[in-house]
Image 1 (spheres, rainbow, N blue to C red):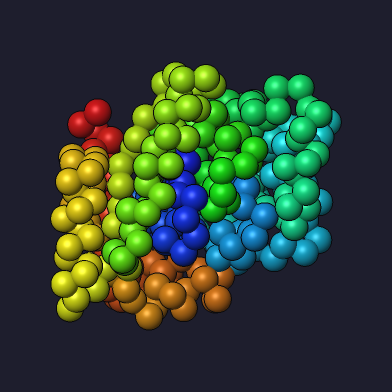
Image 2: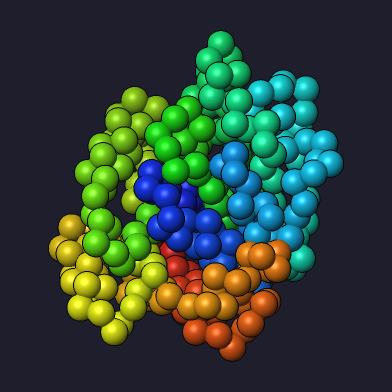
Length: 257
């Protein structure tokens, strides 16, 4: 039985999609069977692994809204061995409204994930940068939450709200929900600010913060426009090395649990 993890931070621009794509790809290249679920209406994860959002018949939207599709119908392979994706479509933008009258609307994604779990070692859910019903679906469906935080001035702004949301979901919908860990992104070792943010985040989250930090890196920023994880786009880049190191640390932490 696989493990489902939501990559979540309600702030935008924190490296959420970048982490989803590159952690999943690095784990897949290490032989793990991995699935990404893209439930962000922007669909950046979908295009970031080289999948065109045009002409997709069944996506996360159909799985969430309609009752006549098996979740596997929406899953397609990526260009990375062992890595599949359930892609997003622009129709997801209307899902918040469409789900209002659905029975068990908070658990629609959980039903799909429970069906898919036996086929994968890890399922990563890319959440929208908001606290709507799509995010609630994600937090209800997963085992744990991986939180990316950028090494910038407003890094901890909104973290208390994020933690409050997780606690509310844990209390009312998913009692076993845990914090998987916190990954620091967009680190610039030349600035005191980045170093101070790392210290502040470690004070707040303590042992939940991964040792690996993801640096600012041009190749990392370029890779999505080529529809590839950075490990394929430029395996020798500092971004690729950082995510490879993060994947190794992630697996070591998993083994210790």
